[in-house]
Amino acid sequence: MNLMFITSSKKQGLIHIDPRTKLYILLVGNLSVFFAGSIKLEVILACFIIIFGLITGAYRFTFKMSVAYFIILLIQSLSSIYLVKTLKIMLVSFCMFIRKIFPCGMLGGIIISTTKVNEFMAAMNRIHMPRSVVIPLTVMLRYFPMVGEDFGCIKDAMKMRNVSPSIKGFLVTPLQTIECVYVPLMMSASKVADELSAAAVTRGIENPKLRTCVQKIHFTIADVMCTICFTALLVLAIVL
Image (tube, rainbow, N blue to C red; front, side, top):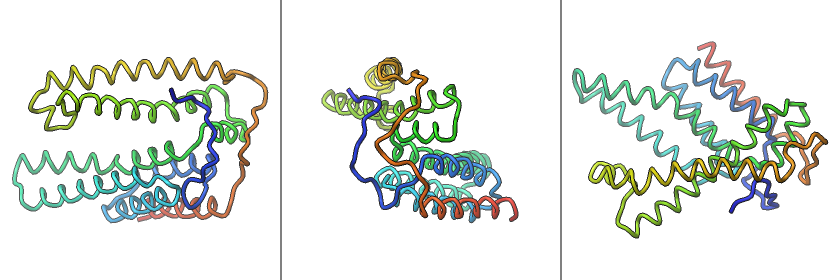
């Protein structure tokens, strides 16, 4: 079982970003997507997020999400050119909606996958963030990765029974896919929440004493550069 506060000394990515800077980037990135008035600016923002994911070490996740993002852009462009009437409106509207929220999801996934729990808690303590906010965010940091790992195990188990969790498998055998993939996933998600809560309490997450961290928490030149870049994008999104 994955424990909640595992500390790894393995270096991840080309640069290390402070968790406080990541929270700022997450906020500014979401606002930039909200205020962006053109596809060009959205694509530029997505490219910045892709670069951010690559230099912080989320290589596999960033690659998959960037490919999916540009496929959505391609589908929207082709649909607006070659489709007509109702089908065109439906598909283009759907792609526009996904295109808008995709960079936000990608940025959030990158931050979750590159942030260690103990480091995050230490950083939040530095800025005196209320514990009622820190504890849910800390549990969330471990919740999604653990559910993802369980989903991978379920997929491997179902492959031995010739049950595919893909969209094609869902369309061909919907009841079998729901029974063998999605029901176990829902049960696993509920179980993970209980396990994380128990692990957090066991490891003293409710302890009112000041927490310590073996990793030094401080800002670097990389934090400054990332802050400037994403702030500039937000300004451009508001002005243009």
